[in-house]
Image 1 (cartoon, rainbow, N blue to C red):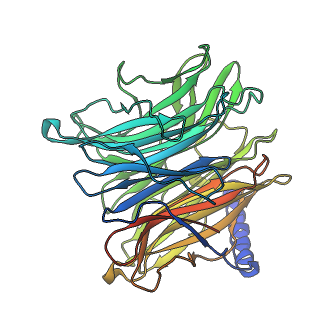
Image 2 (cartoon, rainbow, N blue to C red; image 1 turned 180 degrees about the vertical axis):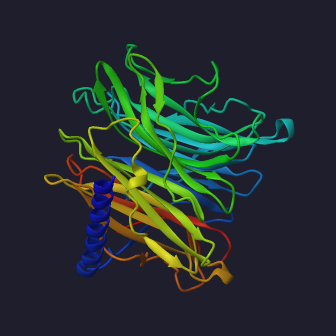
Length: 477
């Protein structure tokens, strides 16, 4: 134990030195460039964007309208964000649809890209509650296959859906073999009186010719898989990340990590599990025992998670998490981060908690919120991952006038992480200085350094230029 402690102290010291040297040597933050307003500027607010992509294709989804009849829209680009489609309807009903998330797959044998969207829909029956729905298209929204309700109990709340796509790279000649879209959400349990974390997968079944899409836990056949159930506390706002599957003893294993906040306001903890799910030859989900990322003090909430791997023979990968820390003793906030780096994924080896890094920002007296994180591979031989973080910083809390700040760090082989510059405000946002506000940031990084496309970073957010009507804006550095 003594030697482990000494090694841990040495790693922390080296990390701190790297952080200082990186901050001093950095040429400064990247310059952001305005690209497009994706929503239609009109009297309807457009907000809560989420983004994802594959290759040169990017997709952004958001909610539009006013309660109790908001709808889900999307826009896409096949040119790395240089040109965008007009808004395309995803879910338009007489009910309320909110809180969308999106995943984008590789092309199938016919050259089609699948876009998968999850969202909440208000069910007015039985007094009213939220349900989680999933739908997908393979022709950029010209046709949708039909929304499927994923939660088990239509009479209880299901909220906060998140989604990720995992590609099978063990079959280079059949790149669409075994596609898996993994979905998590928070669902209320009327027996315990608390919310639980649920899971399902939607995959391309390789045992059928031609392959067909199916659910790992078919909603019509029974309940989804429960990742976490605490009979004494709520488990909410889950996020999921995944690295490409590995082939072990004839079984395809898709490795994932899930984070969420657990507890109650004033005492939230950031929790996580890692593990794997299988779709062939049998379906199964095998999470590890839930662990705590955040220290057991203060108030930690709103986590996000990203995953990166290098696609080389050693299959080096890492998960990186950011979350908000509210320090009740000093009245300050900060954005904290932690990560886990490994090679040849070891499902069930929960190790995120051992690598707490220095904060991306903080502590500051301003309210920090809505952290988002994305990572990408920028070099192989040696492997270097780059992680981007962004968040809201209410620089004028009394006026409720947030801006978006960001930070960038690198993680090299051996698990040494350091920031390349101190936290900085997203510098180029049209309308800033004229009473505008920017909030709800979401990052996506293309992790393609060893493929045909260079790694890129993309940011979407809400912007209100002062009229009280937010629009969805896309920028990149």
